[in-house]
Image 1: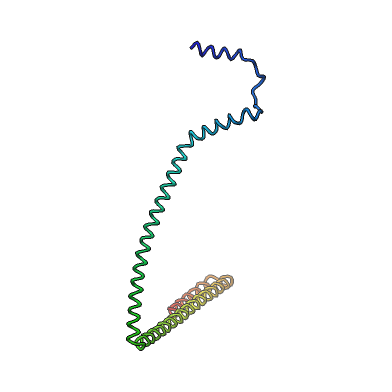
Image 2: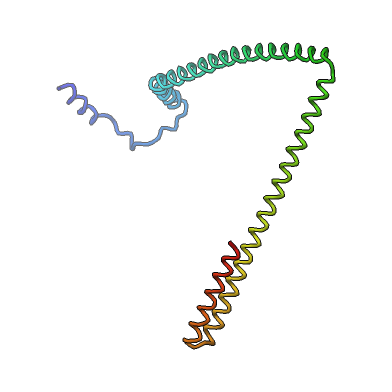
Length: 184
């Protein structure tokens, strides 16, 4: 305890430097500061850098393993593809030896079936277009009818008394029912 007290007392005997400030002597301060900063960085950053490098190493090793597995799968697929190619070439040779007539007949059958399918698709397309046109025409008719009916009702409402108004509404409801039955 005495040593601690003596050290504080001895501070009081040091000569005063004037004030606390920056030391501008570059040669005296930079090597010390740099060595302290580098020491702290190495001491505390060593573990983090080591972990980062280990993680990177594990990812690289995993990528290499995955690449090797993919390479093996690709080689297997390549071998299977080569076997299929040999089989197809053998079958092609058999077809060639059997004659071109079979190939031509199959070709014509395929062309004919394709034309039939195209005709069916064209018919479906035309039916769809016709259906959509009819639907659009019906929608336009309904809108025109509704607008005409609303316009007529507006005109009638402004010109009619109650009794005449009720008779007109009854007549229009009857006409609307008839038009709806025709549309259905």
